[in-house]
Image (cartoon, rainbow, N blue to C red):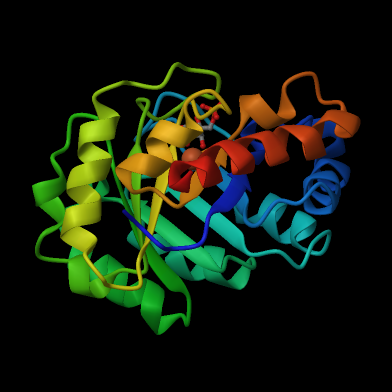
Amino acid sequence: MTTRPIRIAPSILSADFARLGEEIASIDAAGADYIHVDVMDGHFVPNISFGPLVMASVRKRTAKPFDVHLMIAPVDPYVAAFAKAGADIITVHAEAGPHLHRTLQAIRAEGKKAGVAINPATPVSALENVIGDIDLLLIMSVNPGFGGQSFIPQSLAKIRQAAALIGNRPIDLEVDGGITSDNARDVAAAGANVFVAGSSVYRGNDAATYGPRISAIRNAASSRLA
Ligand SMILES: O=C(CO)[C@H](O)[C@H](O)COP(=O)(O)O
Ligand SMILES: [Fe+2]
């Protein structure tokens, strides 16, 4: 079982984009630990969100770390742009290119934390040779591209495998897709410590609900120790 601190990372993919800066300030005030920023290119995934210009513009609305999930291929040409736009953690997909080790080095050369994500069909063993080169390992618990999908139950076994691969290394184990206060305890018990939550925080886009929802996920995840 992990002793890494529980962190809640609301995904702004489900924010009201017409009020994006305000929506980010609201989750900051509501207790978010990270701001999860989903970048989609309409090529690696079948949806398009936004790029570094939008990210740089809203960066000034919070001092919380920007946890940037790049669902783009190729990714190497854009690492510097997202670093400059204010990313703190840059996570790339293992499936997005043939030179993952080079990409991770490029992220660290920008002075940023390097993360790797794997899709539901990709085995954890694909990361055995880069585990010493990352700061965050992201298990996708839905197929990337859209918010509001259901958590894939098989992800729990992958989280346990990822936790074993990480061992005592200071690497965040993040889970993204379909996280709710109903499944956060099981996800935490499997070994995850960073919980991405888009629709379960932003649903309805009423800022008054964000604090209680973030707390509910945090309390459920923390109850793994109970
Ligand atoms: O990377 C993502 C989708 O590709 C999102 O971060 C994820 O889907 C969050 O949304 P939800 O919590 O609604 O599943
Ligand atoms: Fe994401």
